[in-house]
Image (cartoon, rainbow, N blue to C red; front, side, top):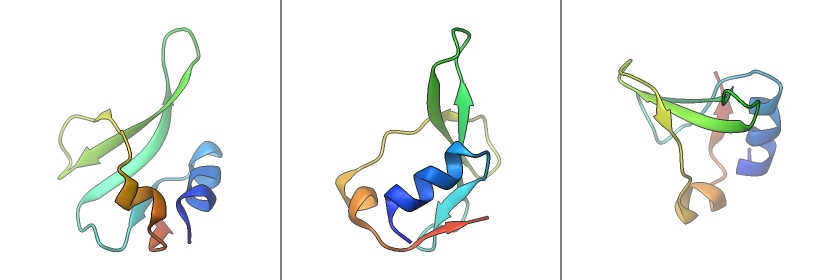
Length: 65
């Protein structure tokens, strides 16, 4: 699926990833003032904010985990 389609699923609470990635998981979270952002977890380490690349935006291999 496209990034846009995957993002809509993430906004409903689902975790998304790309088939090209083995250990990366992306989900939505909220700041203290209720602003939505994407976070990524790599190899079960501490989550960090996710900033998508052009390659990620135009990829068609997004999946729901």
